[in-house]
Length: 119
Image (cartoon, rainbow, N blue to C red; front, side, top):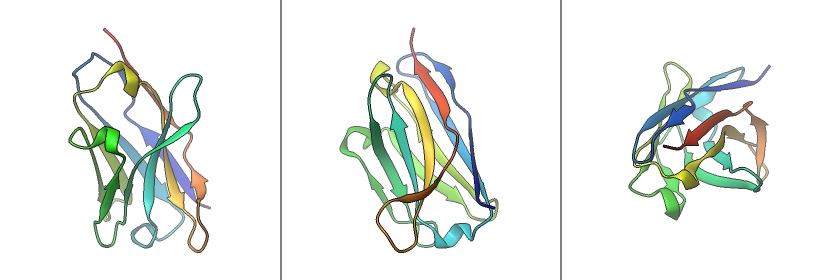
């Protein structure tokens, strides 16, 4: 059974940093591209970053370049999101999502972790 479990969310002040984790199980982690997707209050889903765990190649949404970093620990089957210089616009629920192997889109999602940026 595929499981994705995010952790590390919380309340942080503007300009602060936070690291999110996504523990994965039930599939070959290094074979599956992984993504972070977020949802701000009252808004739709927004793709943030993507990583190919086997190659390490990454893609970033323009609004997070230079502030967010995606990485993996393949030995621990864990995906990370390091966020810095956070603003109130980064507030939302952050999900890790596994890409489907042969179609466009995601086949598994975590339950999400809340990030609130506020003074």
